[in-house]
Amino acid sequence: MNTGLVFTQEDGSWLHPGKVTDLFERLVAASGLPPIRLHDLRHGAATLMLAADIDIKIVSDTLGHSDTRITRDIYQSVLPHVGKSAAEATAKLVPLQRKAEQEEQARKAAKKAKQAAKAKVKGKKKGKAKKAARKG
Image 1: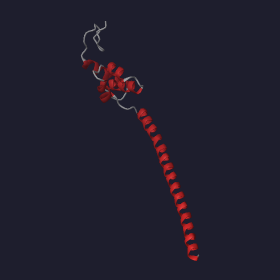
Image 2: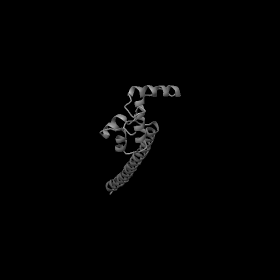
Image 3: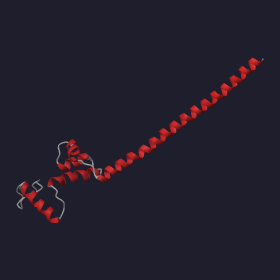
């Protein structure tokens, strides 16, 4: 019998949530798993679906949320490997930026050195011209 309820009595009637929670806690304890609340499974499901790039609208509908912001703001968390991947991708950009900055600084320094060398040569030519004018 399809009642639209997730947990029901054998006859399809409503089952008190406390009974489900009690049974779940006993099963978790018997399995040797660390303590986890039944509600944490919702959070985990949302996190896993979002980490698998399932569209947030689908995840939100699956969880019965009225708005995708609820899913994103309350249930979505970062899985360690997802967070690590994001950090690594960001870190890869930093050396590229540093390298680009270093190359720009090197170009500017080379340009300044070239200008200084030209000015020095020009200065020597002017000095020679002045000496020649004094002698003449």
